Image 1 (cartoon, rainbow, N blue to C red):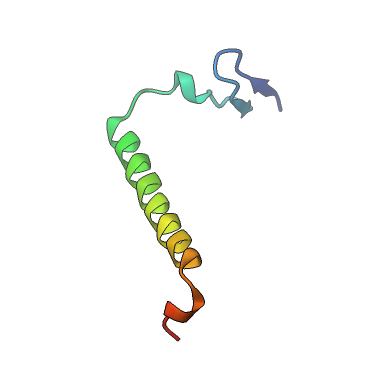
Image 2 (cartoon, rainbow, N blue to C red):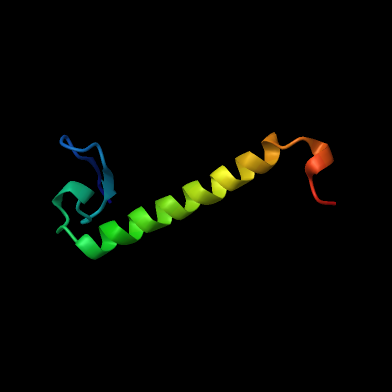
Length: 60
């Protein structure tokens, strides 16, 4: 088994796998990852707002 580190992107691959910079570009996958990241950011922001609220205004 061989482990390779790409000089271009720094991705670590094992065996016959190819790094991400040499994978074919898939716009659908890019959009899916972007939507997922935005959804996680919105949830994180919502929880951060709840943490900043004074305890007297929180619903029990």
